[in-house]
Image (cartoon, rainbow, N blue to C red):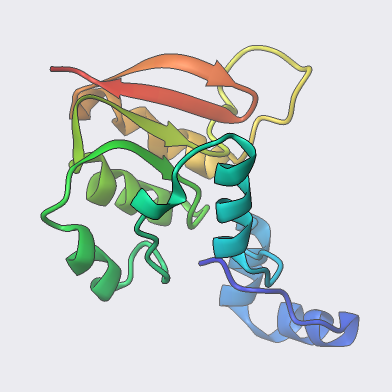
Length: 156
């Protein structure tokens, strides 16, 4: 659930006091600034000389039935998951999108390195890291870790 935080500190304090779901999302890190993500991604592609015209971006939450319906018959060589940071949300994203990755394709999990050794980098969220423990049973092997990102490859 990538929604924006209420703009005023006063609003955030009241929501924190009165709304349990708000507190849960705040603790999980599920708030993001309101930005034009399409433009940001398009600029990133331009910077690296990649063809953005081949990209189909879907707007909506990863668990939105319309988004899930739009991708249900697709296969991907790479899926990057940076969604709901609760254990339940991350687990659902792994289940829903991991199955869409073609053999030898990659699943990249953001904020997923809490159980890896090292202290020189931010490791992400414990809930996401715990959800990732189910990934090997889905036919993936952890092939690379970069900071708080973990890269899994689907076995043929």
